[in-house]
Amino acid sequence: MSKLPGNLYTAAQVRELDRQAIEEHGISGLDLMEKAGQTACDVLHKLWPDAWRIVIVCGSGNNGGDGYVMARLAQQHDKNVVLLQVGDHDNLQGDAKTCAELSLDAGVTHDPFLASFLEKADVIVDAMLGTGLDRDIKGQYLDAITAINRAKAHVLSVDIPSGLNADTGQVMGAAIEAKATISFIGLKQGLLTGDGPTCSGHVYFDDLDVPDAVYEAVPVSSWRIDFSSQVQTIFRRRASDHKGNFGHALIVGGDKGFAGAARMAAEAAGRSGAGLVSLATREQHATQIAMCRPEIMAHGVEKTSDLTSLLKRVSVVAVGPGLGQGVWGQKMLAAVLETSLPIVIDADALNLIAMEPLMRDNWVLTPHPGEAARLLGCSTEEIQQDRFTAVTKLQQKYGGVIVLKGAGTLIASEDTHTQAEHISLCDQGNPGMATGGMGDVLTGVIAGLIAQKLDPLAATQTAVCVHAKAGDRAAKKGQRGMLAMDLMPEIRSLVNP
Image 1 (cartoon, rainbow, N blue to C red):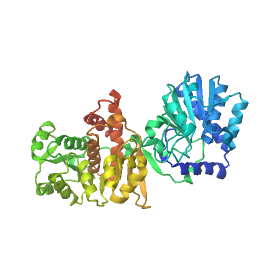
Image 2: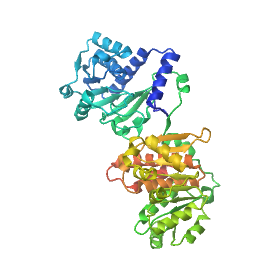
Image 3: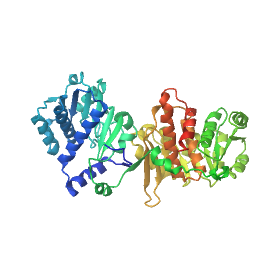
């Protein structure tokens, strides 16, 4: 087993990796299946060393073949193995059929699936359906998935949780909700976004010793990023540096009654290292914000001319937190869009742009699924059904850098060399971050990093990872009840590696 790789693949790309390994490099498919089964057994033993009664549920494809290997190996280690067959056993072919026969020769009994077999299991292994799933689950597989999810035992999924779409992370009618998943050869992008994190649990990976040449022959679909992969973009400060070296971020927002969102974004820009932070907000909020956070230069702005003068003194502007969609918010956004500065667009600024779409190269849009749906003129459900397609369409329609927030946040930009979309995925963060203000904080961090002369894509990727990692640190005290402001001390710590 190894650390999760950066390369992410679709199901078709993983099949091509398999083909390259077997046909172009002479690696036996049976050997790959044996290695996969052994690795899955290793994961099972690592996670649950005292587990004795192991129920392995196999389908009639190659995913089932991995399960048959596991059953044979577990029985050889004196485990009480119960192997349950879902689907027609006679449909087994090739290496999967060979592995099934080897398990029978080793004394493993194959029984048709019955939910009652699950009652005393310590661990249930899901080896039913692999990456080729392209329709909703029905029949025996639906019954088995439902029963496994109701069981009290821990669940380990082999390669991918049965019922999860490997490309989109969408549940295909029903899907296993595993405690852990061990993925092989190519890490499937659907494991890490949408419903993927809920279904996959903790994801492990093993390349099964496939040579590098295989990976060189198959392009990736997207890239996994996390704080450790992005931390190098945060440069260390020199002793001679001064605040002018770290840019001036301006936050525009906070209509009447919504001062908090703008204040959080401004503070996040400061905590991420911007040299100066200004806030253009309603006049009635400016004094209060200055009193509680005097480092923020809060300006009461009622006329666009006042905002225009501020825009001449800053290096990046973020607009949207608490902006509202009224006359004031519309005027503020219109003034911001007249500047050539890099812009971060969030919240109500996104909703206003959805009404009159435009395209721009030097901005960052940060929609959650509901806002993304308005930007594309579709439903939130359609966004979540295929987040990769959604973020690609957003980038093609609006340009710049797009952040589709949610479990497995996606970031899309245009690759300047190929003119194709570059998609990265952050697999950190947690459900405790599903609370008001978290998006405002992210907006501020992006603006703060752009102010420090990171290009918009690098700033966005780093900000998303810093934000997610800060959320994970804050969640150590519990996810429920976590507030956006709880991230501030963690952000400060993380941007000082």
